[in-house]
Length: 385
View 1 (cartoon, rainbow, N blue to C red):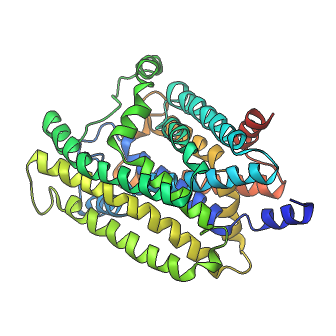
View 2 (view 1 turned 90 degrees about the vertical axis):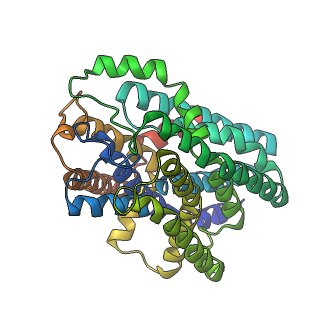
View 3 (view 1 turned 180 degrees about the horizontal axis):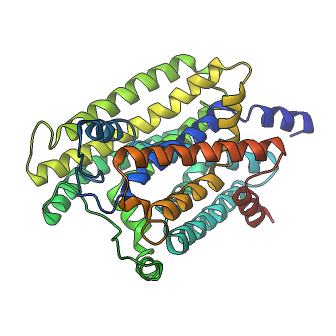
C-alpha cells in the first residue's frame, strides 16, 4: 500500500465507526452506573427498585434501549475492529497466520487490562470477556463468509435454546426478580480487592456463558468484511433495513421485561425466561445500532464540532472506557466517595452523563494536540513493538 492510499484510508477511518464507539461509551456508562446504587432495593434484574413514576420511566428506558444492547454494540464494533486490524496486517505483506497472531496478542493484552480494571480499580469490566472473544474468533478471520455464517447461525441457535432456560433457573434459585447489590455500605477497598482477586478468573467465563457475546462479535466481523461502516455510502439501502429490523426486534424483545412488576408478576422461572429473551434480542439491537451509525456517517459531509468531539472520543474508546469505569468507582462505590449510597436512579444517570461529557471534552483536547489516548498508545506499543 503506497503512502497516498494509506493517507486516504486514514481519512476514511469512518465517521460512522468512531461516532458509534463514542456513543457506545455513553450506553455503557449509563448501564453500569445504577449498579453502584448499593443502598437501593433490587428491582427487576440488574435495575434498582423504582421509588417514583419518573424512576420507573428511567428504568423502563434503560431496559428498552440500553441493558443488553450496549454490550452487543460493543461486540459488533469489536469484531469490526478485528477485521480492520487483520486486513491492515495483510496489506503490509504479513501472512494470515502472523496477522492472526497479532490479533491474539492484542486480545491477551485486553485481558490483562481487564484484570487490572477489575482487581485494582474495582470497575465493571468487559475487556477480559472481549479479549477472550478475540482469541476464540480470530481463526474465523482466515475463512470465507460461508463458514462465518454457519458458525454464527449455529452459535446463535445454541444461545437461543439455553440462555432463557439458564436465567429461569437462576432467578428461581435467588428467589427474586432482582439480582441484589454487589457492594455494601461498610465495604472497604481491601475487602473489594481480595474478593475480586479470587473471583476475577471466573468473570469472563460466566459472562460468555450467561450472555451471548460471540454471535455479535461474528456479526461485526461480517460487517467489517462488507465495510458497512467504513464505506457506508455504498450500503444505504441495506443499512436502513438492518436498522429498522434490528431495532424493532430489540424493542419488541424488551417490552415483556418492562412490564414485569409493573403490569404483571410472572413466576420467577418465567421472568428469567423473559430476561433471556430480552438478552437474545439484544443481538439484533446491537446490530441495528451499528447500522444506524452507518447511516449517520452517510449523512455527514463535513463534521461539525459535536461530531468531531464524538469522533475524538471514539478513536480513544479504550482509554475512556477505563476512565469512565474508574470515575464510577471513585464517585459512587463505598470504597471512595460513596455517592451510590445516597443518589437516586435519576441523579446517578445524570452523573453517568456528566462522566461521558467529561470524556468528550478530554478527548477533544487530545485531538486538538494530536495526541492518542494513553491506553491506545500503550497497547499499540505492546502489540507492535
